[in-house]
Length: 315
Figure 1 (cartoon, one colour):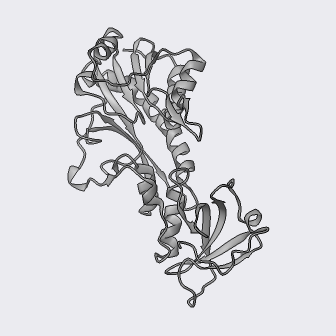
Figure 2: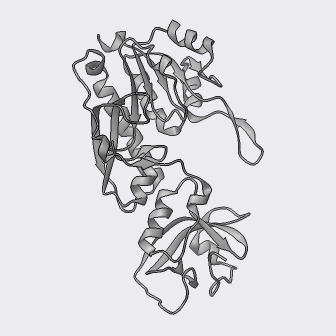
Figure 3: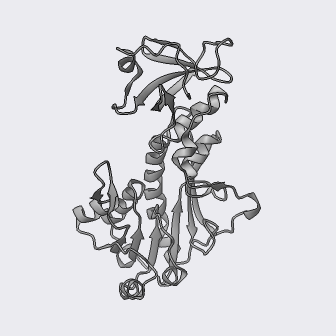
């Protein structure tokens, strides 16, 4: 089959999915539908909000499917009537029943942002940063009933910059995903590219994140805390308590200064353009912060008018 004759349904629900949908739409492939999540309540006003995939699909005029549940019989019939050759899932945020995975004439494939079998699950990008991995990538796999365990068609690798947070890394991986999938679709559909089984005994898992996971334990070493700050930006944002208020830390860096006399979490300097905080081993310089009820701001701006030197974070 040639590109122009390949009929694709693509399932996605986050900004990570958009570059792939955009690239497929700009090429000759037939996107017969974009399957995404229904509008959800978001923000302080809990207003019904369209996800980035729906916004893009509507902008370029693609057919949208946003079922509340994929288990209903009319869902199966709707997808089957589209007669897809390929189903591509990328950050869909939902379980797709096997009977739907079996509908495409050729394959149902998933784009996963890790070097499988490493970091199967919901938070692979964050987990790679948290664990200090030096490289990560994209794995293009056949979808199976077991989570992220299908055989691998193709892989693209990249190094992780120590300064990179999850938002920046996710953006790079999203663009890599778009290239990897479009470079391999024709070969997969024509059975010229066959997948290889993962080394299942080496599998590691990336659980779904909660706000509780992002609480900073200041007794931990500074490099470990910094990884948490990088990994949890843009969500759920590493945070602590300052003067009984939630204190978010959006960005930080390691400090060469040391202080072994004050307990971990102590703010020892609020001047220049940084907030220095002691940890269990070493010190952190906070760069971008947000106190409950206020906007995110540079440490320099936060320090103006705030006398927090000598206070302790986490209590």
